[in-house]
Length: 229
Image 1 (tube, rainbow, N blue to C red):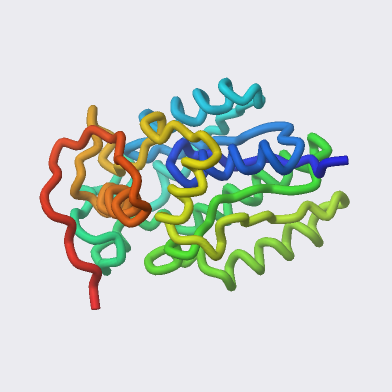
Image 2: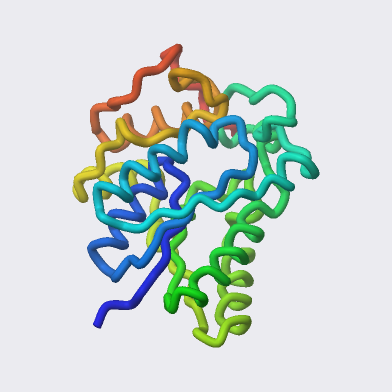
């Protein structure tokens, strides 16, 4: 009998690939997206809805309005401009939403136990930790323990991509049949991917390194910036 899991799906490349992988390995009883007032929520959540519909997976969007109202981050509608450049530059710290993953995982753990799921799938990967403290291994281990010991179901935190780069995730998603044109990365949340913010740079770089055609229309395709020393 397959383990019952819930998948966190933002609508980005990584989480959509994780959704397809989870579908092949587990019984996915639901997928969760969070609308917390980011500049790009309105662009990425429809992508999550699309892929869940393709796979026949129930999708729920949970609203966390207090984050946009009370937290400080350039990623939020209430924040400043999204910085441009390489995704590992210190300027990208402006896009950190304090303890975002901790809040989302806590809510997801309650949802999982309420719906008799045994695991939570999150698409955290090897490149996430450079800027985001709530993606780092120490944090994820601690949250995994909290979910295990804080639920009767001993909900397990599953991180299938934790040792993978974004390029490797792109390759894996391609093999799973993911249509990456139906995913969203750009933090600016405009009509097209801007091509120059940290997440667009990471997306463009991933397809290049994976040797895959990038299906994404960008407003700008200037040369990719160098990785910081």
